[in-house]
Length: 460
Image: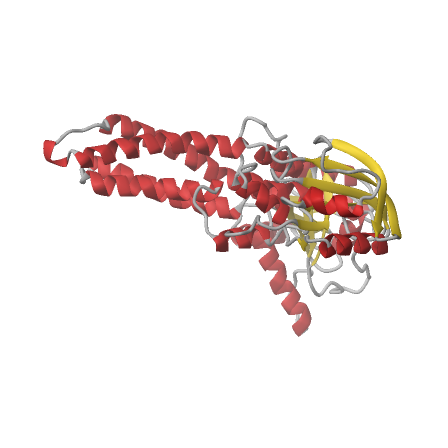
C-alpha cells in the first residue's frame, strides 16, 4: 500500500457511546506535533517516550476538556510510529470536538484497522499476528481468548517461519544446480529433501486438521435442539440461557423458524439453535421450519434430541436416531434428553427403554438437572484448555493457504520420486513457499490487506 503511512491518523480507540473515559489515538510522523498544538499545559516535543501528562485540550481560547495524555515516540509504539493517546471524558461531544480539532490541525480520520495495518507494514507484527488482534478483540470465551492470544504472540508464525527457512535453503541449493546445469552436479541431496518435505507435510497436515477445533473455539460450538412439537425445546433454550428468549406455548408448532443465542459454559462458547418441531404437517410455514431444522442438524456439532417417552415408542426412537445420524454430515454428537422428568409417569415409561441409562433426565420447566446437561455439553464439545505449545488454526484464509501448500508439497514429492528436472522441482518448492508466505505476509497484495483490515474496528 503506497503512501499509506505518509500521513498522521486519528480515531476513537475505545467503544463508541457515553462512558466515564474515552481514548483518542493519534499515529504518524506528526502525531506529537499535532497534539502539541491543542494540548496547552506543556510542550510535548522534548518529552521522553512512555510518559503520562495531565493537562487541557483547547481550541484557541475555548476549553474542551481536562485530559491525560500518553506519549509514545517511534519506534517504541504499537505502530512503530509516533503515537499519542488522549484519555478524555466520555462525552460524545468532547470526543467529536477533540477528533475534529486533530483533523483541523493536520490529521486524517483513520480507516478500520489502520493502526494495526501500520503495525504490520512497519514490521511490528506479521499478517497472521495482525489478524489475531481482531480475533482477540472479538473473543467471547476463555478458550477463544487463549487461542487468539497464542496466535497474536507468534505461536503460529514461529512454526511457519521455521518450515519456510528450511524450504528456502533447499530451493536455493536447487537453483544453484541450475547455474551448473552443464556439469551435472547435485547440491541438494534428494533423499534429505524428501525427508524434509515429508516432515513439513506432516506438520502442515496437523495444522489443517486442527482447524476443526480452532473454528469451533473461535466461533462457538453449534448445538441444535430438536424433537417433536411441544416437547419443551423452547423451554429448554430459555432454561439454558436463563431468560425468556423463545416463545413457550401449549400449542404445538409454535416455533416456526430457528432461534439462535449463545452462552459460555466452562470457558467454551455454545451457539444454541431452537428448531421447529419435527413432524408431518400441512402448514406451509411450519413445513418450511421443519426443513430448516434438518439444515441446522447438518451444521451442528452437538444435537440435543428431546423426547417424551409417553409419545415415542422404542422402535420410533431407534428410527429417529437413525434418521438424525443419516442427515448429519458433520459427525455431530447426539445426546438423548428425557424432558419433563419431574412427572413420575414420564420417568416410569422411560425406564422401559432398553438404553434408558443413556438418557439425560431433566425438567426444563422446573430447572431440574440443567447443570447435569451443561456438564454433558462441555464433555461432548471435547475442547481441552489451549496448550500454549500447540498451534491451532482458526482462520479460514490460513486453512486455504495450508491446503494449497500441501498440494504443492505433494507435487515436490512426486518430482523427487519420478525424477524431473531441477527447474520444475524448484518451481513446486517456490509454490509452497508462496502459500506459506501468504499466511505470514511475506507475500501479499493491496487487495488482500484491504479485505483483512476492513473487518477491524476503527481505532485498532
